Amino acid sequence: MNLFYGHRRYAEMIPDAPALAIDRLTAGYPGLPAPVLREVSLELPPGVRAALLGPNGSGKSTLLKAVAGLLHPSSGTILIYGRPVGACHHRVAYLPQRGDVDWRFPVTLERMVLAGRYVHLGWLRRPGEEDRARVRAVLVKVGLEQLAGRQISQLSGGQQQRALLARALVQEADLLLLDEPLSAVDVASRRIIDEALNELRDQGKTILMATHHLDRIHEDFDLAFLLHDGALRQVSRTLPILEGA
Image 1: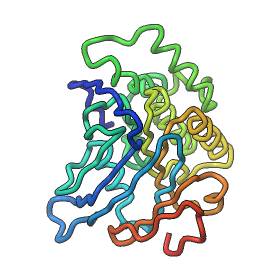
Image 2 (image 1 turned 30 degrees about the horizontal axis):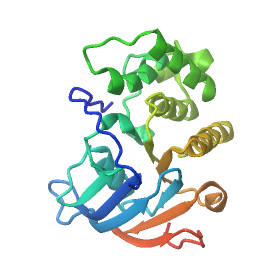
Image 3 (image 1 turned 60 degrees about the horizontal axis):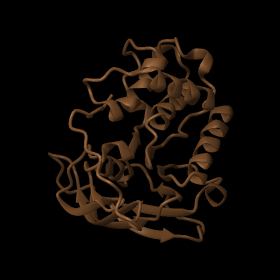
Image 4 (image 1 turned 135 degrees about the vertical axis):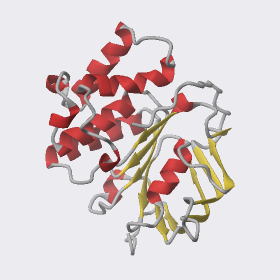
């Protein structure tokens, strides 16, 4: 689990700045002959739920990792509420793909979710009762309160996805980056996840979500971005049918 809270900074938002502004971002991985993302630019206002669409290999995960500060771009800029990546870790929550997490790690669901609070605490302070109360409230929200003491290896796929969402929610971030949170989940989990994300949007939070699910794009999202071969192929506010996603 990627957690990097040792060097906390709490820069204030710049008034009226976009939640996310990416300008001509190029990024990739060592050993690859070409960058995964090429000259990608996009902007998200606060309080929207945006879909990041595209086939496998189009660069969706790479884009989210760059915004989360887990991947250093080769060129371009990323601003989060007007600040550069890393200026305020507490303001950004990243939910990786379920397959990127080692579910064999010997930790309970409650402890896994509690890890989302360390962005506020740093490594030297121990979680207090307020932090644990927030964890309990989030577990109720995602319908996992009865499983708090269960090892994460014993959770079903849908429960694991909700656990990842719970860890992101308890961070109380303003920008949430979600990588395929609806992948291989049951109907109940999808409903719970959708309700939680809509509630966050209503609170003014901003969500950028990579997804392959197009059946409710018009109902669930305010904005859609389509990546194709590492380039931003289409941006839509009206959400027409998106080919190639």
